[in-house]
Amino acid sequence: MKILKIAAMLLLFPVTLSSQEKIFTPGGFIRGGLFLSTGDYKHDVNALFGDAALNITLGNNLNFRGFTDVRIRTGQQFGENVTSLELKEAWGMYYNRIIGISFGKKIVKWGKTDFFTPLSKFNPVDYSFRTPDREDCDLGNIISEFVFTPSPILKITAVAAPLWNPSILMTRPLEIPQYISLELPWGLSSENGFYSYGLRADFLLRGLDAGIQWFHGPDPMPGLKLVSADLSNPLNPSVNIKGVPYIINSAGIDFEAVVSTSVIRGALAYSKPLEAKTGNEEVPFPMLEWVAGIDLTPGDFRITAEYSGRRIFSFYESPYQPLIGREIDLAELAQLFMDPAFDPQEFLRMQTEAFNRLYNNQLKRHYHSAGLRIEAETLYGRLLPSLSGMYNFNSRDLLIIPSVRYKPADGLTITAGLEYYSGAEGGLYDIIDEFMNAFFFSLRIDF
Image (cartoon, rainbow, N blue to C red; front, side, top):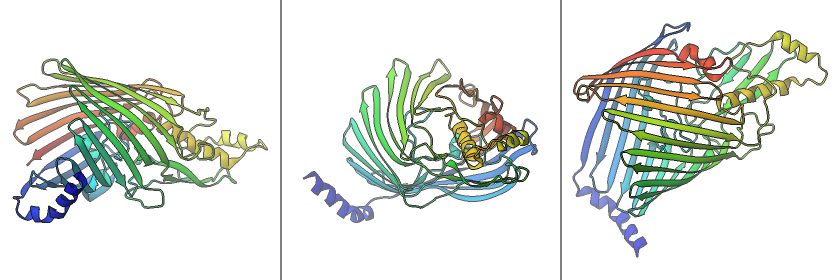
């Protein structure tokens, strides 16, 4: 009987739309932004841009809704001219009390944690994008989403994405040695196996939200694969590396609970690549991740703190240092060539694997990290200072972002702050700090 009712509603859908009042809501912002390098980077003006967003929501508050977000930007970033027109989101949805069906380009974030998001596998990110608003870095994907709500305490969501839209590595502006050709993926890609799908169940109880989920498909983070190499002449080597997808299965659970005036949250996720690690430098190790966090609201402050741990399985020590991010040591290379058992191809493959492990925090068997954000509202909500930071106790990568937002009038926001990266020598943040460390300023008008 329920199936017949749902079928009847779908058949009557076009007739229903014609007799209902549509609601059209435009919005967006206009913004100017500036990033100034703080170190010895060759571009003092790290980024300079003017951008705008146009958001349109269309619906009837009854059974359909559509949303689009168009972004326009012009200026420079890392010394390169940038002019872009991007359809960030564009999707339509039909829904009723029991089901919801949506199609289009959409940003889908699974998981309830903040700093560390091991359950968010449908949302690629541009980690090198210069913006004072971190959500601008979300790329989204073209997806179909089905939501089934059989009762007020249970929501089941199924998502499928036929294409792979990879994350953009933070090393994009990195100056690569001339002997290395690095091709990084960008934009939507369609090949056999590039599809992904996931299933999530959310339990909405009084004072407690909990979820369990499954994901299969290419991880948003690409892996670097050694395509070809020629070390026959150590003084003139040639190395070709390409960013490629790798397929994973991932399962996890998370929760969020209200305890007195605080909110506690946690997550547990296990991911395992389909391909074996041996011989595949782009493929990561299987790993288990866990996150615990808390939100506190003492007075005018809001404090968010999280801890994350990671356990790597099938682990082995990396025999060589990462290929990218360091200059070639000709003396070391010459000594290796003197060994009759030396395999140049395997040497470069393992160096490429070492960089993947460096970027994905898999050079060690265990990792422990912490994140902290302190925000405050003063002057009746017009002055909003904040301090965010993350630290990895094993890799010693540190990110600190102090900032302040001032709202002198409704719809006008002035933001100033600093992005500061620091890491151990040879670590990821040590490699990128030269071009990522910067003061930033922006003026934004919302409408």
